[in-house]
Image 1: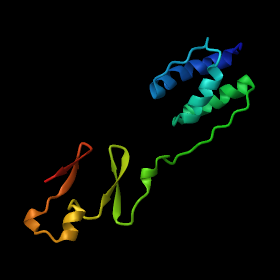
Image 2 (image 1 turned 180 degrees about the horizontal axis):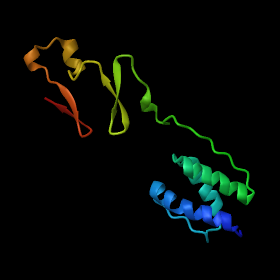
Image 3 (image 1 turned 90 degrees about the vertical axis):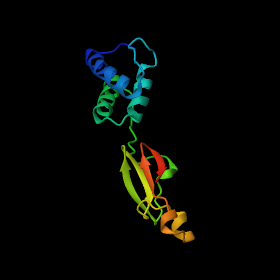
Image 4 (image 1 turned 45 degrees about the vertical axis):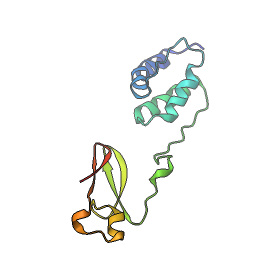
Length: 128
């Protein structure tokens, strides 16, 4: 495909953004460049990248639609009624409302000196 000067300028802007976000390089000599850019546009979370991909597809005369989804697709995001949602390093984590006390200790009635508190340290559960 022969690219117009506007398309080349937009593709040059996208090259660094796609490499930074996905770690792959796009090349203008690639015959499947527009389909690859379209897939990266659908997967991208950057609004500038999404808008630029839409403009490139319009200039190329290709029908294109970006289905934007902000909800995570994994099933581990359901919250139980006995849990509290906190943010840990940019990820939602659900913890029991026991404020660090293990839930099994509360239900078994263990003496307070034998209870261990449970804390998170660098993504790992630590008992103290």
